[in-house]
Image (tube, rainbow, N blue to C red; front, side, top):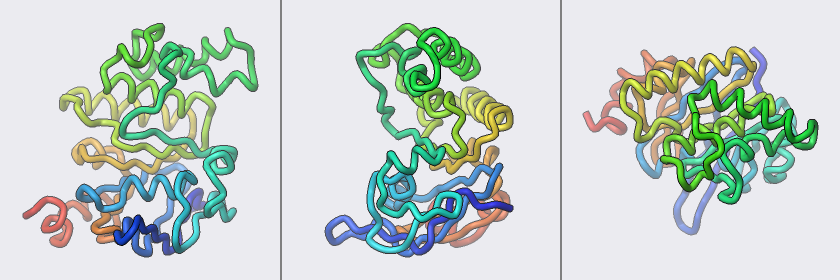
Length: 236
């Protein structure tokens, strides 16, 4: 199966602390790759390295076979990679609707962009589209940011903590909706998440990070019962 993203031996140090230590992972076309691990295990740093927000101190990052290591987020985004953040980075002076419409303005007019944005927001269950982000709950802001990421038809979405703060029913609905959008729009996903129950239902494969290194990788059902994962991640 074709690899859309590949990290080969990626390492990143902040001062004396290694956030990533020789991490090798790959995202295949059409799949959801889940990334889990304790706090401080390097999950968000991995997404930052892939998206070009940080330059690795070692190793390489490839998008569809092209080496993009350290080339910056604009280059990575131009290759069809989008991402969301633990704390959504929306433009406070724009409505939710216009935040989502913004990436489309280079290819269509404002009204068409707003119409396409509204369609995605409705699918994600966002109703208060004319509100500014600061007036929306954090869970809704995450939906708005995800809508902005998917509206332009990316090949890959990097998701960082989408399910935090949701009830179990809301988690089920959010996972189902995201998977429906994935099938409809044809993107692949690398998904960092603390809500393990939701991620395990969505992921085709799971990578477990611990202290910046890959501890385990495989299908969710296999990874979730491995002794080293239970000991390090779940404390069992």
